[in-house]
Image (cartoon, rainbow, N blue to C red; front, side, top):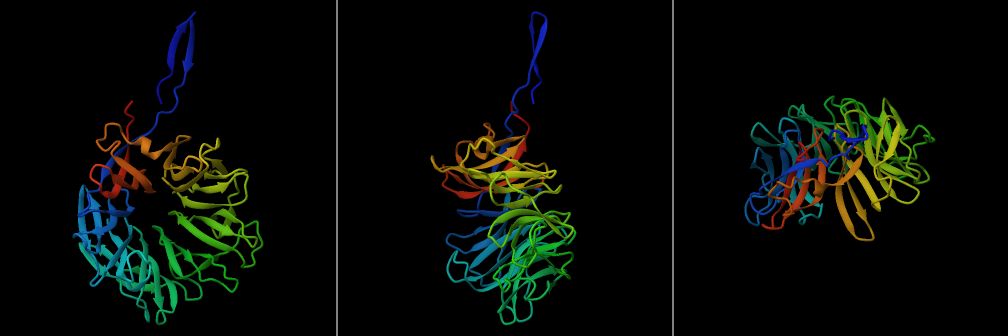
Length: 401
């Protein structure tokens, strides 16, 4: 913020406060080994894990960007497809690889999880009776979580992998996949569908016990609710959405065994998508006229677009400073854009790139993916000069005013 201007006139001092200046971001292009780099995860040091070919027309490999260099981490033997799903602060990378029926089909004839650590790519192995292992993420202690098939590949179950050993979480009847793990080792995932075809989230303190998250405090708890976890912080607080028996989806905050309804912006329903270290939640809520991104702090839900400049908006990630990364659009003009909400205002992400950057006006950012706890942004983009599709890192700078 600029200092108030002091103006003289008939001995009076007039003060005016300038509007908050737009934040400024540097932008770094990740140079792919061949023609593309698809970044999927980034840590607070700006290391980016992703995938891309390393030879023209070759299969994708796991890749790691660090300090300006992209390193080929390889893939598992015989793999035709590779997916990277996570990276921790130590730079350990996890993902899965195998034979896919056809590119991007999501159907696999075989797949194993892997971890890249100490300079080598290691197969995670399988649970007894299974041939399929999918990873989801890794915490800073190096514990990997995800989904594995057992019982001759007839049962999908959550697992954790630690110190070279893969262990199931719960049973085939109580867990189906693990999604999130924090530094405490708390694990959150989903259960199989129940007799009413409803699925719930589960919370596990350390992978040995499972508690089902299946009802909001202000709704009857009869096992009829559908709950889906979307994020967890290091305190073990969880956000997501819970669907009641009437089909209404409500954003929630789960902590200490209780699931709290976060309310709405005047409409009926919404989702929580991300939660930061202090428990602030972002997502979207319906208003009386549309769908708006929100920021929930101190027991209150704040509309991030109260004047309705966009026809719809969604907050999908949040930094520890409370900066919200999201997506918005106008259905009349067909303008759709990534946004950053900070200092009480929503900014178009593309407008925040430093005018001094040689990539300003050359790179088209079209897919912001995540914001780290310290405010680094990972996004997909297209270089209009080189024709390269790759990932970009945006870092906050001091104002250039």
